[in-house]
Image (cartoon, rainbow, N blue to C red; front, side, top):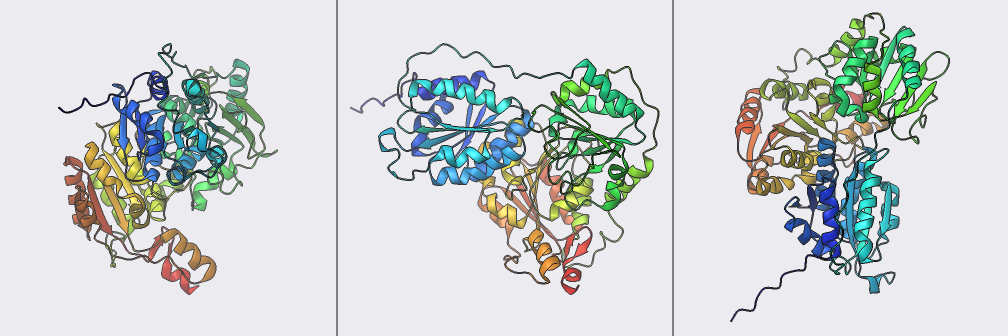
Length: 557
């Protein structure tokens, strides 16, 4: 007689913690299963309101959890085992920290009786994760895990959102804690802009001669109000680094993207502005062009609205700062009785449009390989304009950032941390979270080969994404810096061309190789309609290193 299979109890610390997660609206956990959190993975898998997504690498799990939360506005869970698993996950957690993305991280730890003895794979996880999270802690009592989980959610979602890490000795998850009271759902506070502050900011924008707004990720959920504010005060709008979907790019008040390699003409309106309002934006190094813009002081009055008091005035001198939720603040400003006279931004907008237009000759580029501009133009021809684009780090992204116009809300997922390997896992999570969307990952061959194995996760999870790989056989960004600074390159040529389409097929996905624009557009049209993930391997010219330079020219200078 076959013995009855043991059924795990349902009154454990792991189950109590999962009930807290589910009550907060958290729906997915991304992980590589590990022996240090067996009961947690089981509890999530058994909960009717949650899904457990097993990935091929913890780096992919971290990126997926970050992208899921960035898209939905609700934290996702990333879980990893101690030591190597936690180390692999750290890149995605750091990305969430720099991108202000809420994330709940569970890290399995060595068992309680073995702690602090350099047990197998033991690392001080609280110390390890402290610099890359809003809060990191180790739980030492099973009956407090649910309480700590609730605290983690509060910290992750209030103020400036971000990741929180909970290390749990492996023997605690399965301990029985009895039935606990149902958790009370937590409401995230949204501090408003006071009436006096609203009037002061409205007066600033109305009286200025050339006012501009820098909008960051905090304003993403308030797009209509942002448009209303810009129109009411006739202010030009810049999108912060990799937040291009925060404002419709085809709007006449859109002046461009404050990214890497920003064309000087695009920055003229910001340099010449006498009033700048930064909203929902921490004014990072890239957005401020190396902490040089906007220039505060007597000539330019800089105001900043941010939900985190620690960010207000952190990187530039301010004329005025307000601690408020970006959405609430924009809603208040949009309802202001003050209205500014019309200002002509056509010249400033034309400066951006010129940099965002495919230059003549790109389509007829002699090669070898396609011109990157032609790839972006092909994407614009073949893909729906409301496609959700996830993009990786690399010089290919300079062409994407300029050439793809983000006309619709929530159509961009990109790491402000500049982490390579983001695009493919981010696309998988986006398709899982929003299966009705067309989701397209855009990567270079360097980033694609770091996390491209997550195509198998996409196949298994029924997430038919499209992956566009600019394959040029280079770590292009570093090759450009080497050529410019050193006059030679070292260690940046990678094997190629690789059969990336064959790699995709080996993982159960579809694969296509494009040497011409016609092949590219055909592959993209077919990919959007396919019921399997598709990787399109686009062979691009390695000499075209950026929108403004070729590698050969840089090496000959």
